Amino acid sequence: MSKQNITKFLIDLGAFVALLIASAPRFTGAAIHEWLSLSLAGVIVVHLLLNWNWIVQITARLFSKVAKGQRFSYFLNWALFASGIMIMLSGLMISETVIPFFGLSLPVNRSWKELHEVATNITMILMGLHVAVHWNWITNMVKRMFVGRVNVPQARVPAITMQGKDA
Amino acid sequence: MNTIFKILAILVVAVLIGGAFYGAVTALSSGADQPSLPERPAPPEGEFEPRDEEFEEGFMFPAESIKSLLMITVVGALYLNLLKLVGRRKSQPQAI
Image (cartoon, rainbow over all chains, first blue to last red; front, side, top):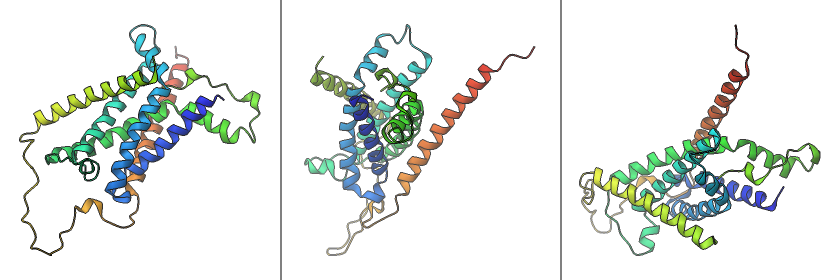
């Protein structure tokens, strides 16, 4: 199990938990909701940097020799990226804390609020697909990090290569 | 390709997508610059005006987080079971 895989797993786990917390503004309050969401954007950039090689490889041979699953995953990730940007944009347009913090004010438009809710629901659906696509990698990592040390013999655990984890 | 260039590439793509969204939303929503929320008269001086109900103070049950987790779980489970079903059908021998 490489160090980079552990780093990826821990960053993804942290981002997932942060996403769940940030998705409950009534629970956290506006300030935590907005600042946590903004910091999540930074984590997503790190996530993309860690999976940069996969993105470049699939982009380069998208219309030639790519397995169906990889192509599906690639377009799913683009959709997730776009919906994440939609959440950030609409969230900034209706911001009560972040935008005023920078001394800015934006025109009030109710459609941004509705779009924020729609984009959140779309992102959660896409996130479900994203998690499902990488489910084998996630379960392997959990087994190797927590269960593997106790019960599973090292030789029986299938090796995880960098290619096994997509963006 | 160094890390800064990669970050710049991600940010440029994000700005392009965000700009396209912004343009589409402002073009499609009529009177985007006008406040669409109904104007309320200001409360008399010294009188308390409650904030937006959405962000009340105090501890609340994280229902939205559970809803999000539920959505992710259901979609993920459906996808994985669909894959299994398709795989099982493909592996079954054709009846003559």
